[in-house]
Length: 121
Image (cartoon, rainbow, N blue to C red; front, side, top):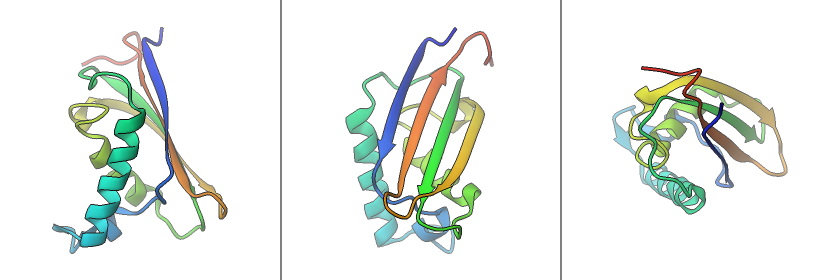
């Protein structure tokens, strides 16, 4: 039984963690602006309290070309969602992640689900 679900659409173009950080240690100026824009979009759509239970998350990255590595897109996004949707990404017990080419409308679509019958600590 799914207790809570909410779909979020981020219209800021998906960006890899490699572009967010310089040398994987320091957030770039561009990276900071993009993270803030994405966080604002998520906060404006997430109408629930911060989740503190085990969750499953489904993510569709609509990217303009094949170049983006799915794992690099995922890491940056999970960091952005921390503190907005869930307290810590260690709460995630299942991730279903997809990359779809969409040159006209790059975006990210997210659905977080709590299912106490399927996920447990």
